[in-house]
Image 1 (cartoon, rainbow, N blue to C red):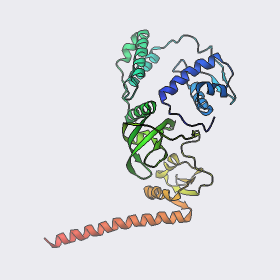
Image 2 (image 1 turned 45 degrees about the horizontal axis):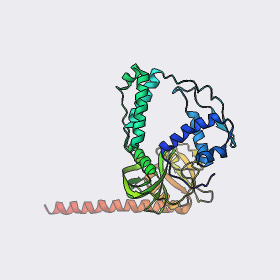
Image 3 (image 1 turned 90 degrees about the horizontal axis):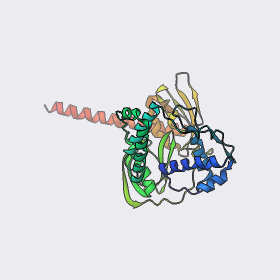
Image 4 (image 1 turned 180 degrees about the horizontal axis):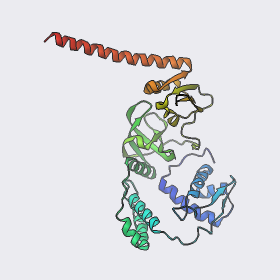
Length: 338
């Protein structure tokens, strides 16, 4: 049920569970949601999340043979179990894609050795069945970007219940910090994140993997306190209705704000910009956004926040003017000394 304490779960563990779930549901048409969740030792929210993924899986990369599974909230229905029960026949391009992906995953750092060996054995069987397609796939390779390595380390740390050390870039503060975190779970909401207990702030935090500059798995055991499972279906950041309202107007060059900040509305302006209304428990934190936008945007309300942003901008300009005056004085003195 919602609110059940989070158990660290790796991506590989979730994949195993979903494979078992397919067999379980095939043998139990109309199974009750609460019974299935209890059988797999997960919350109903976690089960529904798995059920949202299963319809994207099937026996063909081209679609058409996908799992037709849905739920009415009480029972789970699989409408085409017989259609996907026939022996799998891979086309040449499907076999190539599968083999390239399998070889790439097998090279990921942090993958448990038992899983790596199982994957290599399965790959060898597919190669034998694929024949000529396997020869073609051997000429292709995939190189993972840095996020792939971070994902593997986080996944391994969750599986082995170990603490992580990271150097993390925070765009809100425009700084890189070092932290020790106890990872709880990996989540994907647009980007991939690790939800963890941060030992620096002594609070639960969410870190985006592509902003991790460096990562190390530590020998210390991971021991996050028991926390309630958050429903992330509406996004990672979910401002409360009672949070103060802030209105920001941005030009065409500032439209990215609507993509990065959760907001109530984003109305088009005649110049191609946006009038964005959002809520935040800490409006003062948006002053940095105003300075970053420069000519591409401004805070409209509340008035005190707009005044604060203007004051911060004036102080920044004054600092630059002071540098220019000092530089001019040094240059003048140097000229007089010639």
